[in-house]
Image (cartoon, rainbow, N blue to C red; front, side, top):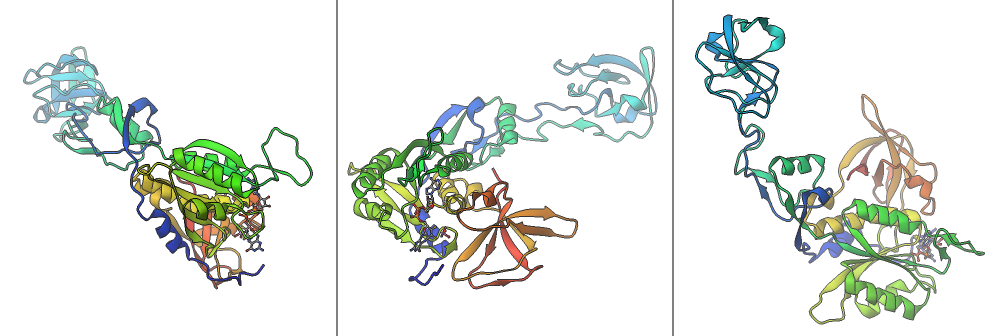
Length: 408
Ligand SMILES: Nc1nc2c(c(=O)[nH]1)N[C@H]1C(S)=C(S)[C@@H](COP(=O)(O)OP(=O)(O)OC[C@H]3O[C@@H](n4cnc5c(N)ncnc54)[C@H](O)[C@@H]3O)O[C@H]1N2
Ligand code: MOO
């Protein structure tokens, strides 16, 4: 296949055009229980010390370390969840993990090191002050920034919120996506296939990716292969969606109506990128009908399933990241690997689907055997996209740059 058909735009310029002027979506208050995967709209400040009091890290005996090295009377028993009384001088307290350290004690000796005889305990000598304690505020102190705006709420962050007794959080509204499939040959799974038809594999794949990136698919539709129908569906989708995503119909065929519809209704910012797969990818904007209602962003993915997969990672994920003001979604983590293959690129930057072997010495990238943009097998369980710049020869063993796909 020839790429000799005019100037192709580099991926960086396309991404800059797509993100230009994107502002963060408004915040909304939701229950902490429902906040997994959502992105904080503002900083959360700590209102409690965690832990809220000095407590024991072990089951054992609490004492003043200066009293160590002798038999001490056991004068108190402190379980987790009860208040500790001040320690009588010269005594020690039986204490359990999480139990509040009594005033007058400054260390805990674990029970394995203590000999007990009735109501007294032998404490070994030379116990340092502070031993086996968890000091108040060690994890979080009142006034600390507990979690920063833009944090995606993972398991530990949800635990952190609950540790403060917080039940409501302000998160960004999820980006609303309209996912439109073009192509008369496309049939929804569950229906019989006619001659020349194929099932719609892009829709469930993209829906899963978009959900994983933190967006919400609010509309799915199959667009007929005609100019008028394409315009109507695109305009309707733009009224409710933040981002309108289409698949197929952006190339140069006579039945490819998406680009023309975009140009008629709004603005085409970029078309024809120096990437493989995904060359005919189209980026733009679709103004809403009402004068002050703003515009939806438009991402037209080529129909080939691998072009959709790669395009979603390269463009939809950062766009969603910008709408959520979430830095972790803005760029994929990169890692350096060693190619176990050879290849030569043309004018387009190649995004090869690879699995990665983490050996003791380095990371080895193994490409799926068939890198054609129609071969979706190449994406199943891909660990990374190996980025091979344009006009580059790669020999086995060469250092290559990979985009890591095993991210939230
Ligand atoms: N003369 C040229 N032909 C093509 C060029 C070119 O430069 N000159 N570019 C090729 C490249 S590269 C790509 S990528 C494709 C993209 O074309 P479209 O975006 O217009 O996509 P379609 O033609 O509608 O579909 C391409 C392919 O993908 C299948 N498809 C479409 N939708 C789905 C779906 N939802 N699920 C599964 N498969 C889907 C469709 O049946 C086609 O086989 O254009 C090349 N042609
Ligand atoms: O640009 Mo296309 O290589 O078939 O996705």
